[in-house]
Image (cartoon, rainbow, N blue to C red; front, top):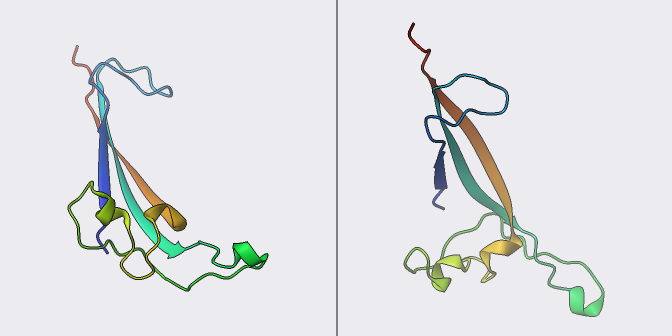
Length: 98
């Protein structure tokens, strides 16, 4: 399984709510991982049964296509898998020079 990573950058003049510094540059790095499948295969008969797929594995397909959103192990869409987000904030704080 391949981890996806999203980087969000705040502009230099934009300070976080807890700081009052005029020049703050920070980056938020989010690693998204999809865990076990949560799809209830017995919902139509009133029961509860999952297939036991432990981790999302993308099918063969280009990134951004519908084929890449299908799990190769269980055939479900990626939305049925539990999403785990690891967030890391990296702050490159510059102190103003006087």
